[in-house]
Length: 270
Image (cartoon, rainbow, N blue to C red; front, side, top):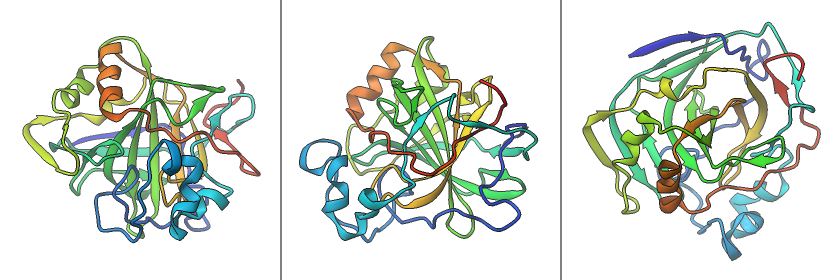
């Protein structure tokens, strides 16, 4: 297992006074492990089942329409409030055999127990990571070609998600391991015992990030999810991004209003 103590400057949204994170909803899609779920309404990214209609498809999806702390959002340097001196995040990710599934909404890599982060000493176990094309979060009003989400859960079911943005550039060797084994069939998990991905190689060199309280970006859009999104994108080649786009299509939810939320950033100044 690769273990790193990274000075990311992350604090729990309600550090010192208990967690302020939503309970996980069991859901097959982008932000939860594959499991039986309470909501059966079909949803997608286009037409009558697209994001504009999610809140009307199922009573359990109502938060997609009525929520005031929804994700994704625009990450605006000029509006985010700078912070310093916050606790670090410890990252301890293993490199298990690749277990990948095309769940019909994204390509998702599931993780067994043992990989985790600690935020201010509080442990969140890594459940899975997955992709959106183009990015869900905007940076200063613009979408990037792709975004990766690393989904974590604590012992009480609270979620914390790390977002990594991608821009077109050099080929990414670690990402290629996944692209070489993209599943075309939907709903079947594939395990590749000889393939091992080192997630720490996806972290940018500049580890400044935005943090805010948001939601799942897929139905049921549950709120209270603790988000950390790195400011600096990492690179993947045009061919690599195209390979994922070909499989996923457009699977990004549009940005949502900030309302009264404060967007924080782990650095001061612009």
